[in-house]
Each structure stands twice: as structure tokens, then as C-alpha cells.
Length: 514
Image 1 (cartoon, rainbow, N blue to C red):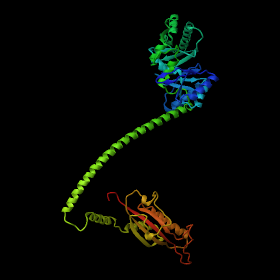
Image 2: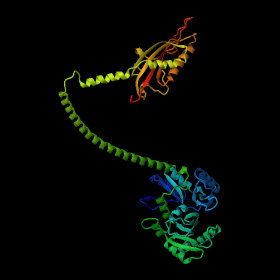
Image 3: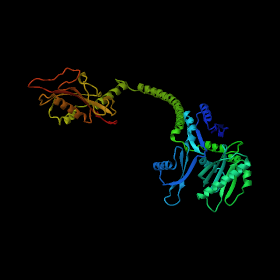
Image 4: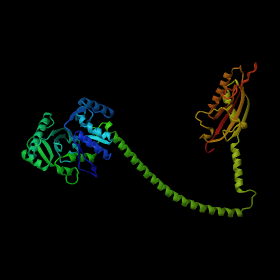
């Protein structure tokens, strides 16, 4: 495990951790003190498989379900698996071409990923080095449709990745033997020939053109390769100095290495590619990290907006102060002119303001004059369906206060139209209210108080159903059944009575212009 710190667009020297218990312990200690920045895990292992297949062209959830089913079928353990869309077939149903990849030994990553999760370090993603190679080959002077990219890794691996039109098709990692540079050249050429024959067997190469091989290595190894194997009808070699490639991808300063590790790490750190292998359960800390950054950015934007609004308010305040001073001067000017005109006018028995108040009062009285007609019509509409209810008396008043009581009495129970929270809180414009106390009796009455009470309550509900009725309060029932009262009622034999009393409030509503 090599850990690179990305700082100011440059990779710092890596820290190395052995793939054993001691290495994991040291890695854990490192994470204890390292900043909780997002981690990008780049994997370069032998145990990685590549399968190119076609699937029906579907989109959305159907595509995701189809890909997940295909990954489960292709790989025994698809914990770390990925599907890269690579275009569509030119003929037939025009199915999608998909490259399915997976790490077939998840246990290789589990210890390292476990330590990252244990220390709650944001894991941005797990990445395949061959797939990241697509970013590299686009920076190289590659013109061939079929190209083999060969790189050397510092852990002793020879990575060979085959591309068709700069899209990965397959990749293979071979272990380099110990020895000097001349021996390495022979081994590299032998591995290139093996993969060329394998590609021919898969019919990945056209028969009438050679395989273009792009070797990224140190200058000494490239010299040995050029000397031992010139171009032929089957293979053409394109030799690229690793230091020159580092400059092509934008790395600064002297490269100082014979291997390509830092080039791939630089590309990944700079491009910040979308996650490939990591399941959602392993990237949750990164999700929270990004959400926290989003909240911070939103907070900063809110503060900037608040400062902008505050500045605008300060400017408005200064403008308002200036306008106030100007208005005060105009007011004093006109007041002086009014006093001059008043002194010139003949004397009158009352002040103008008193005359204005009298006129307004008279207008108000004209606006608020009313008759009990609306109340009488409201009661008549409801009594049509209640022929057993006889009204003996109606006490009536008009008021601008819907809570006004006739005779200063307080009601013991209340009913209001559904949806009204309080009469005084009505949002409709109300000019005045009509309030009435209705006294009556149930007739004929055979002594059934339950039935009489039900009639009165039905009458109350019928009134409440009318749109102009604001409230109907029960003042008296034929039989007082309140829990805090002595049971009362007229139980005289031969001539029982069922009397009731209701308090009704109706409102006369007008529009703003009325």
C-alpha cells in the first residue's frame, strides 16, 4: 500500500505499508493522525477479471437491474464489480456493449478498507488501474485503433492493457522476474508476444495489420527493447520515456522514477473520476463529507446574501433619513401656509377637525344602521324543517363585536361553523354582526326529554350549516344534563314542558370597497 498526499496540484513522496499485520498496524496509526480528507483507492492486482458482453438497450432502473443480474452471473463474488458502457452494436437490435470488471478476491482489499472505515475517513471510491489507463492513453500520441499499453509498476508488475479505439477491452498484470535491465527487456518482449497471440485467438486483432505496442518505461529499458526486437509485420513498438509521459499528463518537476505508479496516481487525483468499485456502504462517510461541504457552501452563500441585503438596507435607511428630513421641511412649510389661511378666513363656531369628526360619525351611523330582517330570515329558513319547535321570544341587537352578549350573560356551551377558530379572528371583512337570543319550546311534548334535546341540537346544526351564521350557542336545554349542575327539568304530571334558549350570531360581510 502506497499513500500519496495531494497538495497544491502535486503528489508528495509516498508512504509505504507492507501487506501484512505490521503494515496494517502502521496504516492504522497513520490514519489516526492523518487529516480526514477524501481517499481515492487505486487498485493494481493480478486478481482482476474483464468480460466484454452485450446487453439489450434499456435505460433507467431496467438497465441497472440488468447490469446487476449480469454481474452476479459473471462473477462469483461481485462485491467489487463495475460495468463500463462502451457504445452500441452497429447492426441488429443495436445492443449495448458493456465491459464488466471485478476484483475476484475481495479479501485483498477488506483489511485496508476496514481500517479506512474504522477511522471514519471519507472513501471517495475504489478504482481499477486499467480503467484509469483510459485517461492516460488519451494524453499519449496514440493513433492506432488497436493499441497495447505496457507500463511497469514499482511493486514488480508488468501491466499490459489492450485498447480498441482508446477503450479498455482487457488487461493483464504479470510479475517481473528479478535481475538487471537486459533480462527485463527479454521478459517484457516475451509477455507482449504472449498477449498478442491471445488477442489473435480472441479475434480482437485484424489479420492485415500489426499490433501497436506503447511501452512506457525508463530510457535504459527502452534502449534494450529497441535493440532486441525491431518492428515486424505483427508488432510495432512505440517507446515512451516515463519522464516524458509524466510531463504529458501535467506533472511538475523532475519525475525521478523508472515506474508509472505516480503517473496513474496523479491522473486519478487530478481527474477525480466517479467511483467504480466501492459499494455504497463503504462510501457513506464520503457522502456525509460532501453533504457537510454543501451545507458550509450554502451557509457562506447565505451570509454573503445577508451582507448584501444588510448593505442595501443601510443604504435605504440613509435614504429614508434624508427623505424624512425633506418631508419634515415640507410639513413645516405647509403648516405655516395653513395658519396664514386660517387667520385670513372668517371665524366659525367649531374647529375644522371637529366638523370632520362629526361628518365621519354621521357617515358611520348611516353605514351601520340595520334591522332584524336578516336574523328573521335566517331563523325562518331553518324553522321550516322543525314544525315542533315553537319560538316564544327573540331578543336582538346589532354590534361590531361578535362576542357581545344580550344582558351581559355568559354562555355555557358553544357551537360554531366548522373551520372557524374564533369569531374575532375571521379573516373576512365584517361590517357588523346581528346577535339574537331565541326562546322557545318543543310542542307537542310527551315527556321524552332525550328526543326534545335531540330536536334542539338538530336545529342548532341546521343553523350552523347556513353560510351567514357565525355561531350558535346553547344557553338552555329542555333538561340540563351538565355534570356540574343539579339535574333540572319540568316534570309536572299532565303538563310537561320542553323549553330551550339559543344564542345566534350572524355576520353581514361586504367587500373592501363597500
